[in-house]
Image (cartoon, helix red, strand yellow):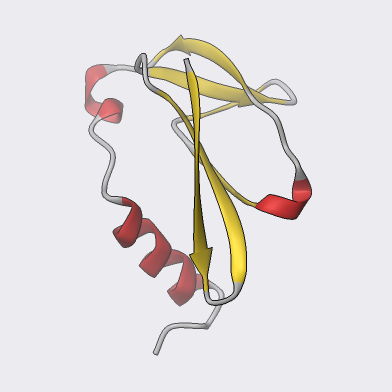
Length: 76
């Protein structure tokens, strides 16, 4: 089943979308192990193919949020 968790980076709300059945999430025919989008985008995803076992072991949300901050230059 598709799961959505919301979190903030600074004052901006984001949606983390993933499958709790070990499947890819798919939007516009592109498969992702999970997706993190600004909430205002309103993107929707469907479940796709099963992921190989090595891709199911995802890192923590905090690690991904920190990586995002580094990428967009908001890291302190």
